[in-house]
Image (cartoon, rainbow, N blue to C red):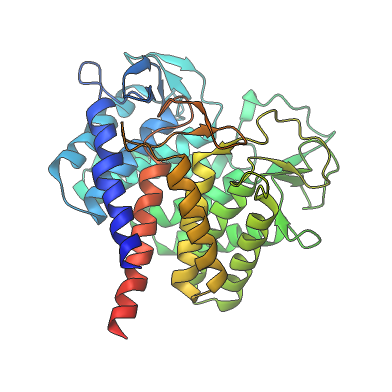
Length: 391
């Protein structure tokens, strides 16, 4: 176990964080570049609000929980100044993307821009106490709650009343976001939201027949035999289960913890590619042809979140299946995704496990999943190691 603890910390501080420190900071016009080639060179200068917020969170959290390096705090403050000056419309909702100088390019149709802006600013407020960060984080959080039933608002393409579905992504993220903002919104608000989120994730979207969680369901939670309704994203399920495990641990809820582990292991078994290894990106619950052409790709975040989930499952319960899956995922992920030559991890592999793109960041990949997962695994396994040493 000690070898894993050292491995994950070393990968984080020696290979991943330095990549973003060296290559992502726009010293001239503010904010962060995320469209980075394998060697860190910039291939596009557009700035995506959710990735800006994620990098602020990463740097502030590393300062708070790993080491109080002044450089990490400065990077987080650098990003915050850019998004606060440029990132919101007149309602306080966050644009999806800006050009390099901060001019808006895409309207605030994507509520996840708001989720990660408030998450980043909340983490930065924790380490600085700067009122502006806390106030904007709180306002954004309240707007998210106002918009959660119709997150896209006027930007939705769907016709209401014909096939009304609700998506899993937002309640999943709210389960983690509420904990991240407890120091701002207060424990009573968080506890109330947790009740709602646990019900949504573990009852409404969970389908007992398959033992899996669907990406979309009818408003009453029933199954929709449609492209969207049949879609399973194993990575989303597994990520959500470690969010739920943290809530179960917070509440001392053994039944919830065991259900989380059962669902996570089921999702891994369902999503694992027995022929080539790795976790499929998408599957159809009825084994019909998926409409996502990237269905059989192997993505960085899916495998990283699975590592976190299995590490936490083992930390919280000592479940041996979690330990075995962690070791299996660790071997695959470090062989296929990690890049010791240039730093950071590849994001997109084909089914055989070969890089489809050698980029290290883009419109969807930034400074978040890799460092967060490495830190979470390090944190969990360090806890297990200390417990073993003590006993």
